[in-house]
Length: 163
Image 1 (cartoon, rainbow, N blue to C red):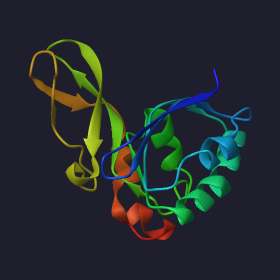
Image 2 (tube, rainbow, N blue to C red):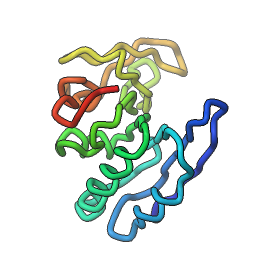
Image 3 (cartoon, rainbow, N blue to C red):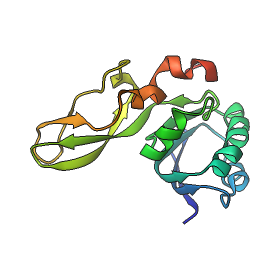
């Protein structure tokens, strides 16, 4: 499928950049990052469905150089990105990670939901409570307790300052 992006300039001068698809051996990260206009970047990764080892190997040095040159925040880590972030130190080179998409289950509706969770909602060892968007009932977090490690400042401390 490859990787595609959408870019929108906000009124405050920052860029909203949403990535969709796969980060793999065919992804041209140099072109993707170099072609962005100057300014702060809010990178939405909720559309990333797959990362492979070669894609990650190429991502780390390129993103590190990118994040050193401009203010960067990361939002909406997809399930696939969270799994890699929790295993790989410095995947985001000290950029601020503000939110992820987490799996929740509603017993009342018998339905799974992907829910955005902000870093401010997360406490070590506890999943934030969420309500079902369909019935309004309480949902159960549907993953292991360490899932939100990617949002905890202590996890990111070794990767540089949390901004």
